[in-house]
Image (cartoon, rainbow, N blue to C red; front, side):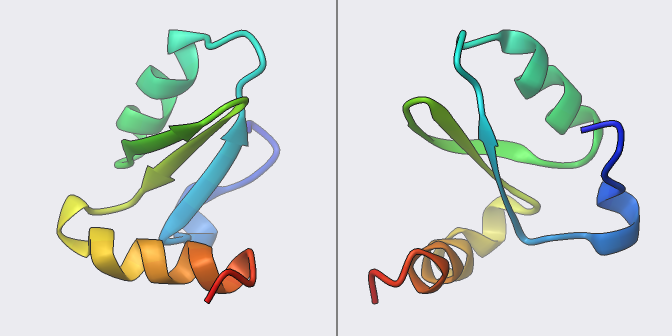
Amino acid sequence: MRGFSLNRYRPMVVILENLFDSPDYVEYMKGCGYSLWSKLPPNDIYVRDQSQIANAWGAVKRRLKLA
């Protein structure tokens, strides 16, 4: 994650591969203004603002072509 600027791009949704279920990812993302929204092992799904959960889910579904 250090090579990717969350502040520059400000994505609404971030999906991180977390193979070993490390809590370090949650702490890092929290410090960047993101909250853990869901787990889809081995991935963690983070959203920028909890008030945008419905929009975030729509974005995830579009990206994954589920909608």
